[in-house]
Length: 200
Image (cartoon, rainbow, N blue to C red):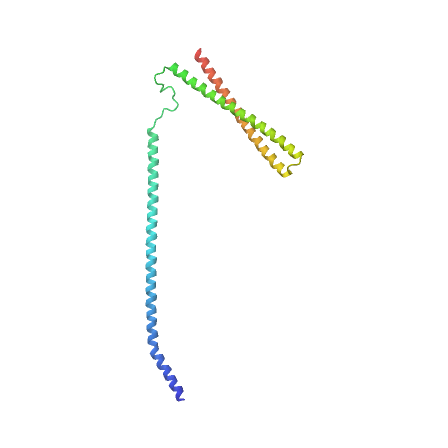
């Protein structure tokens, strides 16, 4: 029994002596925790300040860009208001030429322009005819390959599709050429009417 009492008393003494140290260690942990929280809060504040500064810089940059764009637009508007072009006033700045000479010069330029368009039409027609000939040869070749069974049905369909697309493009080109021919014909007629009136 004495040993048990002795054992309890030793344990009791140890707990009494150990509790202030444990309590002191708890305070140290609290201080460390408090310091780490302060550091974290300072870091967060610092990051917040940096983000705020960055956002302000970005907004200032955007404001400057908008301001510059606004100034550019204003300058363009002022320039347009100040500019009073001649437009298509061909007779205004004719230099040393008289009215009749200037008119003849303009009609000559118009005639040259029409002739140039006619040359372009002729070149386009030549291209169209060559294309039609190539498509015709491609069709013949395809038929021969089909009959000789040199190609599969799938390959034949693909080639037929390509030939069909080429024909479609050639048809579109032919339509454009027809329209251009009509337009050029009208321009020639108008120019002839004008030159005939001038000669009378």
